Image (cartoon, rainbow, N blue to C red):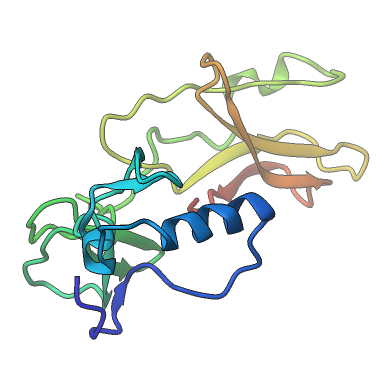
Length: 195
């Protein structure tokens, strides 16, 4: 792979402080007889001190990214990398697809909400109340949610959490709204950050 193109990210050679074992391997490799520097570079394996292969070398022609800057509508080849809004993507095949998820329609709430939910008058007092909804998506993403604030007297505190994969082996917890005392009763919109 030619290194003359500065936009190609490839191996960087820099001086390093080798540990004693690495220095010994380097000394032995320098003394291997019957192999030229080019043969060593073209070899498919990393060699031990005796010239025996010890591990495969990744193909340098498949181990790079070619920075293309901000996405524009055109054809991209494998390994070409673009930035599209908050997303950075690498093409894994020849494509003209836009890399970042795009809305297929205007954002909308999953349901229309009344001024006050029917259950708001069912209880006068409660300690900790935990409620939740579960959504499954094949394609799509959440950008916000609404939570009902039943009391805004300065004594009640609220938190809003998003749990991804709640039944999986390693659920991911994201706090969407830090603990707060609500200023008004009613529905409050909470943005979901793009991760």
